[in-house]
Length: 360
Image (cartoon, rainbow, N blue to C red; front, side, top):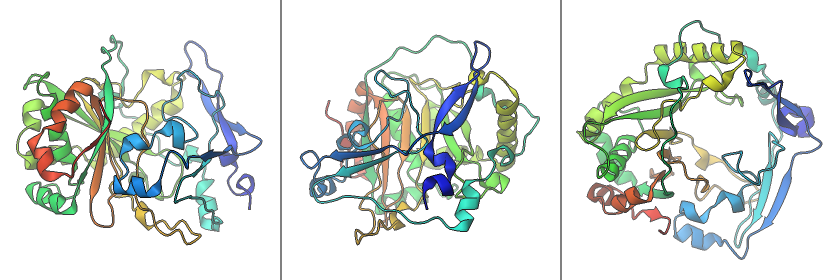
């Protein structure tokens, strides 16, 4: 069954219509002749055994090489056509990945759900952190990506230390603390930092987990540098307190109302209050069990799940899916001077495998 028959939006491209100075327009999906398919011969650049031995460091998996599209759009050279779905097949020495399975009737019904009815509209105010304020942009600094892995044994120790917050990924609090220690040379101890975390809103509205549309919001926690450097259990408890599901549902419904009713959506942003020089945005994929996804063709299960290297965004972090062994890999972007401090952090050295850092 072709994608056009089973899920028409997959074969379209995104366009913005009716935009004006006081109207951000409406993004719609319009038909495209075919799903873009790219083939890349990377046999001279990537060898599966070498990647495996190095544990797939982020700087070896640049999106400009292995992905058909950049994460951040609007940069020079970007294709103006914005397909909903793209496929790139990479040939590397020792491996290749490509498979396809027919959708079930239940999956087709879910994927074609009318998004306008998926989230109930609320009347309350949106979070102040999502209201765009006019402020001068922060001075850009040279930044880079790094990744390090918490072995299962270290995570067990950290989990015990943060016993009041069992529902958080055990790498969350120590990662925040590591970052703030790396930044301590330039940020005052009483400075307040914002910790922003994307949250899956599907369960709040009874939306099935496999719904393909956007259904998320953010939680925001403000803590001083001194607080973030305190006991790990206190940090974990403060982060957990921000996960008020009743309040999060109200905030999400209010946000949906603004997006629905306001002609100019440029005044709203989930990162509106973020000061990129000191704040943190963490996206956790720890609970996504991608390691059970069989590729077919006797290729077996994934060796590693990684986020490709992309344009640096200071303060942005990802916790990647937990491995079958129980390890967690963290990917983060910091300014170069902070990463130098990160490299010699005794706590990071104590609890993680040797960091895989881009060369400076």
